[in-house]
Amino acid sequence: MTSSENHQNLDPNEQDKFDQVASAWWDPEGPFRPLHDLNPARLKFVEERADVSGARVLDLGCGGGILSESLARAGAEVVGIDIAPKVLSIARLHLHESGLEVDYQQETAEQLARKKPGQFDIVTCMEMLEHVPDPASIIDSIQILLKPGGHVFLSTLNRTPLAFALGIVGAEHIARLLPRGTHRYDRFIRPSELCNLLRRSGLETGDIMGLHYNPLMRSVRLGGNVNVNYLVAAKKPLNNAH
Image 1 (cartoon, helix red, strand yellow):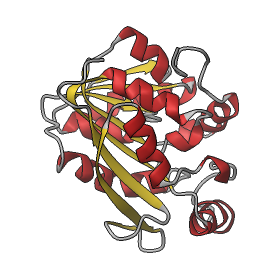
Image 2 (cartoon, one colour; image 1 turned 180 degrees about the vertical axis):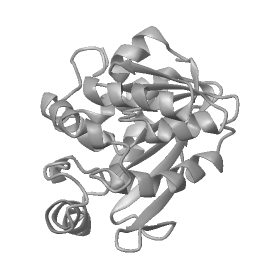
Image 3 (cartoon, rainbow, N blue to C red; image 1 turned 90 degrees about the horizontal axis):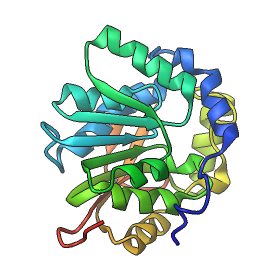
Image 4 (cartoon, one colour; image 1 turned 90 degrees about the vertical axis):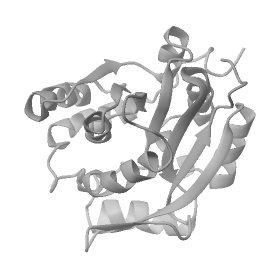
C-alpha cells in the first residue's frame, strides 16, 4: 500500500489560512503580490519544456487560479484542484471576468489519482509541496495522474538559512509581502530530497533551476543558485504505465 492510499494528506490549518485571505487573491498589490510577480517566469519554465497548447493540464494546489488561467490562455485544457473551498470560489468567480475555461475541483491529489489515472499530459505543482504533511504522497499521485511521457513542473522553497531569512523573516515579518504563518521552515524541501522522491516514484528528473525574486523591483530571474526558491522539471517515462 502506498502512502497515498492510507491517509488524508492535508493540513486543516493550511486550508483555513488560505481561505481567510481568499478574497484578496487576484489583487496584484495584495497579500498574494509575489504570486502575480512570479507567474510569468513559472509559465515560461513550463512552456519552454512542454507543448502547452492542446495539452490536458492539471494545476495541483491551484489556489485562486493565477497559473491555471495563464495555462488556459496558452491553449491548455486545465483542471485545477485545491482543498480550500473559499479560494476555489474566488477562482471560479474570476473566470467570469477573464472569460477563460478552467475546471476547478475541491479534491486532494490522492483522490484525483484514484479517479483519473494516466489522464494528464502536464501536471504543475507550484508552491504547494511545502504546505502538505506528506510531499511523497503528492509525488506518487502525480506519477499516477500523468500519461506515459507526461511532464511535471514543481516549485518550492529550499530548506536553507537563507530561505528562512528571505522567505519567512523577510517576506512575512519585515516586508509583509505574505501573510504571517504562510510558511513553515520544517516543511521546506531540499532539491536533493525532492529529486529523490521523484526518482523513487518512477519519474525522471530534468532541469533544476533557481527562481530569484526581488520584491523591491518586483523583478524575477530564472537560473543561478537554488538557495531559496527553485523549479524542477521531471517526466514520466514512456514505458512507465500507471
